[in-house]
Image 1 (spheres, rainbow, N blue to C red):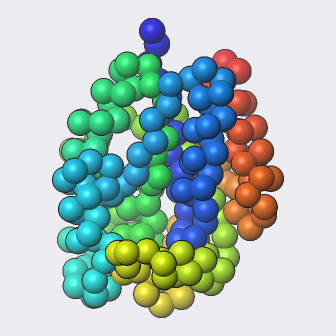
Image 2: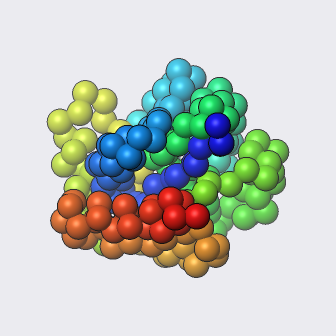
Length: 215
């Protein structure tokens, strides 16, 4: 049995990643592919605790450096205990966020006040040479995306609004960052998330088929 493929979905708040991951997983399963969905932070038991620290509470309780260190601690545990073993079994893994979110949020979001070299070093230490096979970045107007996310969080038991509560300029920086990231390697695909769920799903399926299923 060959190794599985690692697909990551990225994007700003309210871009619809969770919905599209569920639809893509169902599509692949219907094709006879074993699929596991996961997320960062929170894909493991330890990650769930780190997610509470990172995504809830006062937006100013820690700076970009502290956030990056916690995200990479979560990423290391997530990869070693869950993602890499699944890929070795031949399972396809779809993750809601990966390292590109750390670059977008902690580097671009904070207006590049954190050295990019530090993030590169953290990646090398905790992840090594491993990369996703396909990264789909969902692009949406920040004001619309944040409004979506706040509405969704309004009915949640735990209010994960620490980043949504940041000023609009932070989210505009995020969008610019994700767009720049999308241009940096052929394994990225940038898609317009401001369309119907069904049409966006069709685009994601098309990209997945072209990049990973027709080789």
